[in-house]
Amino acid sequence: MKKLIFVIIIGTVMGENPPFSFNGWVDFAHISRLSDYSIIDIPYRMASLDFIHQSENLSINGYFTLEFQLQDDANFLESKELQEMFWWNMRELYATYSGSNYEFRVGKQIHSWGNVDENSPLDIASAFDYYYIFFLGRDRKKATFSGAFDYYMDNLKFNAVFSPFHTTNRLPSGDDDFPITLPIYPTPDQMLPIDGLPFEGGVQGTYSFGIGEISISYFSGYDRVFNFTGTNVYSNSFQTIFSPPDLVFGYRKSNVFGLGLTLLNKYFIFRGDFGLFNTKDQNQSIDRPYSNELLSSIYDTLFFSYPLKEEANYSQSTFQIETELPFNINFIAQLFEYELTKYKSDTLPNVVISIPGFEYDPSSMSPKDLFTPGMGVPLAVLTKKATIIIMDRTFMNEQLKVSMTSMLDLDDYEGVSGIAGSLTEYKIEYNITQDLLGLIGLTKVIGSDDHPEGDNYQFNKMEDFSHLRFEIKYFF
Image: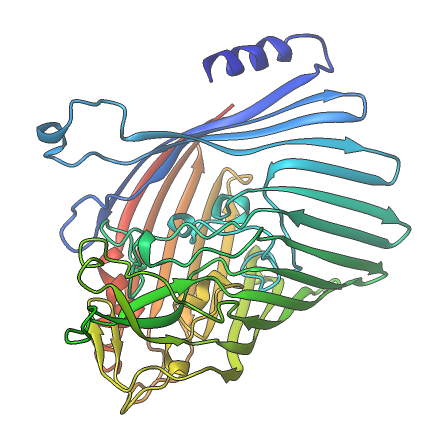
């Protein structure tokens, strides 16, 4: 890594149009809870480096980051390693070949699809990093080893993406201070691998006209988040002792049809994306040995097997409007909505399954209650319907910026009137110098005491994430 940075620096001093160029930033941040001022211990990116090497029609692009997380107080009682709190991450590294009206890219890269700025149901060619889900742009995404082709013809742009690899979202571990957690975290032994090469790919066409553009897209790939695919019950050879239900997880195959629209005029900009998802569990059989290696010698015979064989259709949409309010206030509003339109599956055993993180009672539940979307807008893990409002204004010749961002849960819940949950951030950014930025942000999360899910309601779990943060960011 040091050698790479040295080569880039040498390249930047080779004339006015150097073959190498780079930029980046270093960020020093502090984040603490509002409740007791304790530090919130989650990963954050302390530094980044972007570079490009250009040679005629060919270029090499790279994007590296340094991620940091505080060590536990007792860390040195277990290890003497000093560097385990830092991680270098090669977020992107790909080659680009450009022609007169086309471009081909291959390597580890981040893709952006859709018309709305964020939270597009069509922005699925790249997976997401949930630790940065409240960030913007590529900062919240993961790269995938893939090829991409862009072709331009008059007002038409054609884009194709292909990858022979399956890329999943980076999910919260459940044992740190990040507020979004999953009901269950399967062990690797509980995951059923994808059969064969997990090919993924899609195409997108965009037509531009006088007051905007319209786009259509199709993508086929495996879900970014695991799904419950069935359960097995084992016994010993004499069929006298039965095992607890062994849960099996996998990844459904999803096909996504999308439609996007952008309309421009002197008063506002409208953007919208709509995605129709057809998803199907590929595991027709989940027969396999007991996932618990310690007990597999006791429970050595598969007695019952219940693959779910899920098939479902669901839709997601995000609509956005941008305008300028009086007093030069920039205003952006988004409305996101998710709906499960069709579902079918096989049955589960007629017994109560109750293990940490997984509850199933056949008297009051059906497999449909366990369904979660595995692809699309990442905010779908929080709610089925939400609005996001952003307002900001600059002062002092744009040296000072004041902003407010609020996410409101608009879903209907039994026994809850009004808005069930909200997350609001107030932020002040000040350009101390041209290359040095200071930031103060306050984030407040409010849940609902009347929510039927109680403490399991996502916004109730997130209340302790209300925090104050300070940042000093240097750009180079």
